[in-house]
Length: 236
Image (cartoon, rainbow, N blue to C red; front, side, top):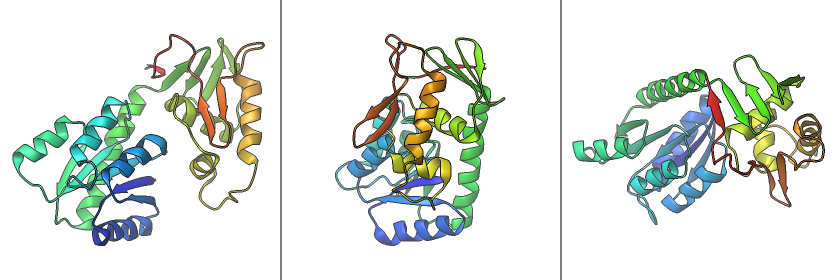
């Protein structure tokens, strides 16, 4: 998994980073609330670990802003603030779990697994994504354009699911590489551009605007048709 650690104490951040990497996860560390909020909105993370007492922006505000902006990434608060009021406030603002420091790494891993199971269950309850004329059945791994099935390779499916699950969100080539191909790909490769080109040929309607927008020098994002809202339609 890709995990964002928002923690200003370097000792704790390094402890989490080393432990989670040893478990096979990829971690990014943000040292203050503003950086954490920015990375959480722009990056493709599977989980956010958030401290509360942070420079520049309190963790409660970070959590609240993310949920207001419809960022649904699972989020766990890790903090020394252990009063009932603090815990209730964090959960009501949208946190999926709340752990008080100090904690054992074994308990953290168990709670991470629990949070991700709940997140996976929510996704299974909504197996289909729809944006414009494109429907993605995530359960069957099938894509339909105007009701007609379109064959996709595994990599094409992975890129399309990433973009359709995050409409309007900008993904750099490096982010797409990391998410779809793993961390060992050459960052200078043009494989992402090649696959985006293939996807466009399969999902774009003739004469219409491309579903996948290129942001020059930055990456790609899913273009939302007018009147479709910020979120993809989901059906179960």
